[in-house]
Image (cartoon, rainbow, N blue to C red; front, top):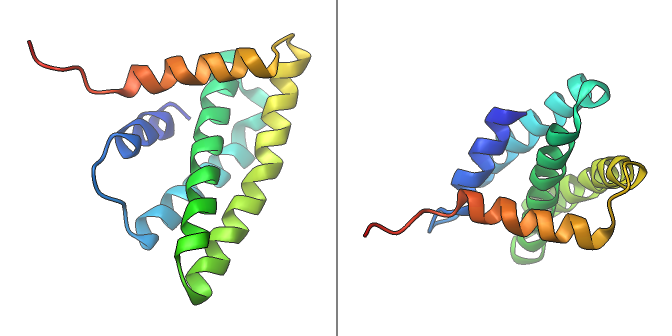
Length: 120
C-alpha cells in the first residue's frame, strides 16, 4: 500500500490529468492490493488506504460527470466500488476511536506531506 500511497501523492501534485487507461490501471492495483491485504493493515496503513480510496473515488466521480459514454459509466462504477472500501476503512478508524473531524484533519496533513516544497 505504501507504493500506491506514494503514487497517489504524485498524481495529486500533477498539473495535467492522467489518461483513462492509467487511471483505470491504478484503480485496479488499489482494489487488488486492498483485496489481498485489507485484513492485515496496521492503523497507519488503514489511514493511507482510506486516503488513497477517497481521492481515487472523488476523482472518479468528477470524471464520471465530465466524461461521455462508456468511460463515464466506467468511472461511475469505479467510484461506486470504492465507496464500499471507504466505508470499511472509515469504520475501522471509527472503531479505533477516530471521528470524522479527526479523519478530515489527518487527510489535510497527508495532502501537505505530498505537496512539493518551494525552493528557497
